[in-house]
Image 1 (cartoon, rainbow, N blue to C red):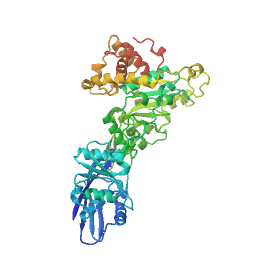
Image 2 (tube, rainbow, N blue to C red):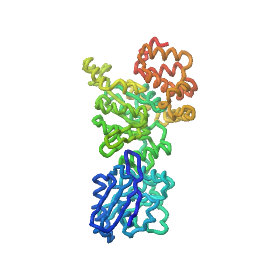
Image 3 (cartoon, rainbow, N blue to C red):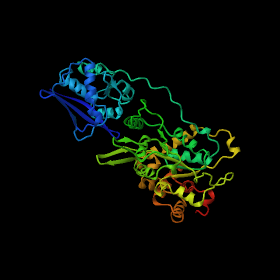
Image 4 (cartoon, rainbow, N blue to C red):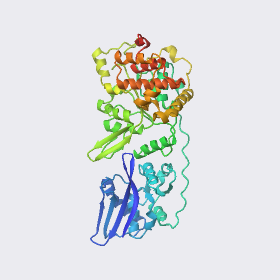
Length: 509
């Protein structure tokens, strides 16, 4: 007899429907699994044999058994096919109702005693099931909270193979149980009130949050660069429901599911020893990297020049396109990577360039080589360059500054202005404005054109840099609740773009 069960395979962060076709026939005893299974999938035979025996099913293996994982040209990875394969074999043997498998997605790994163990990628699998019109999903109990995030789908958690067989064999399946209660409230992100001094860096952080701009912090050790960067999520708007589901799906595919819908934006801070694959994703089994785990959130690279140059160069495509394409011999995977980049670095190898109390001991050649570890194209994609000087004793002892809540309210108001323009611009934030949209909503008023000409002709601003300058200026106007971009907005944006002091702007129109 032939029976078919439905499950799904994960490739990158996308799920693909897989039909498990189980055929049991007379002939020379043999178990054959086809459909490009990897080693973990092939080993399911041993797990299923033991699970069926230990659960009391008298399945006869002395026949010719063929399992096909269709489509046959899609490579299958992992152990999530165990439950569908076992139920397909039982249905082909007449021990389960074959009609009960229709319209149900089956996901789970089998233990030798018949227990159903959790697997990664359940959320994108169930999102696929909803898109394909399936009505039911059977998942491990440990994946129930994650699976319940998908609306309009009856999710049945099972702890054992017997429970799954009972569900597909029932004439009228019971109503799905309610999802588990969400976890307790999480610890709020660090507050900006903890930061003493650094008014320029605080201002840059607010601008970056308001327009989703990339930010580079440069200063000596201990000045507060990391402290500032870690407070960025606290002033960013919460994720929308659709964005939260996107983020949860990426983390689920990476095996890092948090079981609850995320409210705050992700903050990823990889160590500077991270490899190209760790940052970009990929590998023999395609997995999301740090740029994808930071999707819709913040990617913070501390000690930027210490990262390998090749690893940093992979950031260029996702910074422009919001996704990263991993091309390998076996195929191509496209991973989401719409993140906001925040980086921190010292001004020189010893970190004391520009300090008074501790003079820099680096030679000009050493300092230049240190800065040259970061390519020009990557630096050109940093919208805001901010110096973070060491604090004086009087600044350390100042009262707490504005808390994150007050800054977040101004950021939210600026974001609302951008969302109101989205039907015209086609972009929800200023950082994603196209060149044509920039000409419409960020056209400078007054002497703005003369200032831009000065910036391009005399200060060496590139065409990409000019677009990014206008995006930041548009954000400054939004923070000030202005419809037009003024010369003041352009001057401040140029200040942050070039990372110069006020004196460096002398002679501008």
